[in-house]
Length: 239
Ligand code: G3P
Ligand code: CA
View 1 (cartoon, rainbow, N blue to C red):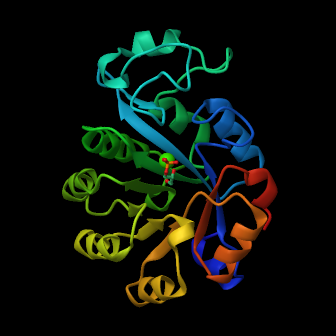
View 2 (view 1 turned 60 degrees about the vertical axis):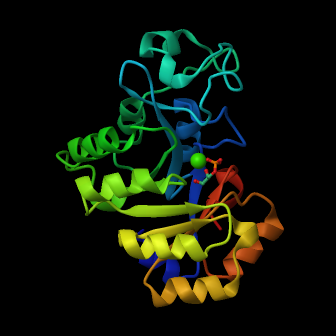
């Protein structure tokens, strides 16, 4: 179903946060597969660049919280990272591995976390677009680091961009205009009806995060958001 069909039915798109973080260890292939099993409209992942130049899917700057290892992702080689375990059973995936698993079956929201991620992400997206299974509508690149988004825009102005914001939305709207962004990605607790009006006037979609509790889902549904990024796609993928 296309984004606009969902909107006409007032059904926000359900996007699995870090795969299906509430169900399986975040940002793993297994978590992504779980989100796909629940027929999500999209999946959100976090990207860093490791020491040998590959893009890897992990939320934090270091591997300390999510794996049995220690150290900064940007200082570790892909070989180092692949020896680490997440919850004793999973591995840190590369972006390429995630792309192979998703295989054009849903929207992929790639959040650029680390430095020097823009150019490699553009390259990976452009490579996918050579394959008929993927189209530009499958990709949405977001970041709190708006300088990375500016780089993406310079390299490929047709890639859809989402301006992430964890504070007041005024600056995010300004940046969205400058970047000709596709969407703004506000923290749902800060999202108000006047923001929705402004987004509508400017032709911006609204992807809000991280919406887990039922009351929170009700709130953002009533605001008519485009998409809900949630840890629990099992609860809401049929909302
Ligand atoms: O992209 C939405 C959300 O993932 C942003 O926050 O910290 O979970 O990456 P965080
Ligand atoms: Ca994220």
